[in-house]
Image (cartoon, rainbow, N blue to C red; front, side, top):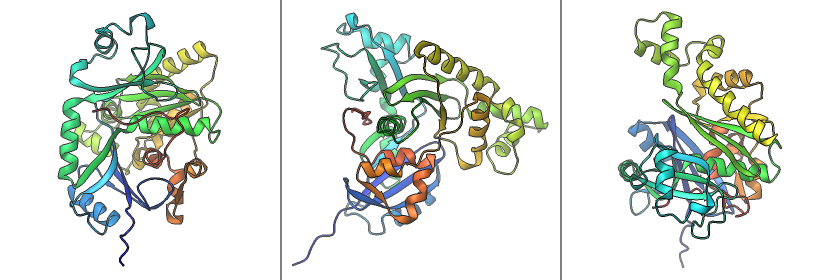
Length: 351
């Protein structure tokens, strides 16, 4: 009698800076994280190599079947307070999308979940006031899935990486395996910085700030007297120049918006934000977190995710343990946990 080989689990995060992959001993916990790898984004050859390393023996379909998280540039992850008297109005959600988020509802794939526990909001019952709108343009869903297939990845589940990351952090804080004070979470992209304030009670605040990494490039050009913006861009995104001293100038406009958001939250709630967490910075730009942390006067979040993962029956093989202390891997590891509904934030994009 021949025993069939136990199926493995695969998880992929596609963010602005890297493709991060993991293999687990089975698709569902309890399991061991056996391997974790990353490669540069927009590098098909490097991705093919990473897939071949993470999955030495191809599946019958030829694809890497995986749970995938994505960070599309036009994603919406916004906390909103509903007017309960209006939730049954068929045009109410479209009005929120148009007036508050500046998007057209019919062009987006959206989910509305409770900001505290991540469960689907029942607009018919109209009992939940504080909610989280999560979604992305429908055309992006289709194009991203097509690109994944072309790359050799079959997304068995496609999730918004922002929500996966936030949900994992909420659950971690709710279990007491992180700081007791709220955390400001920053996802710094090219043209936008998505900011969130997160506590053990859920997603407390959200705000997209129209200041991203690209806005810092012209400042670099001017301050260093470079001949063109492209030269400044290459230098900024490289690891060949120490920008630490220039940090306060580069984040000046972003800092103003952040201080406004944090100040409003602290006045409204009486709670002080205690840590800052940046989840999307490449290692070459890690100095930015230090600059932001220093300017805000709060320390970076140093989170050892290992105890939290173990509470969800996820164990890391010894060579992978160091990754549990690296914030860049937190979102991918968060995809693996199966949460208690009391604390979980649902991450799956509704199709």
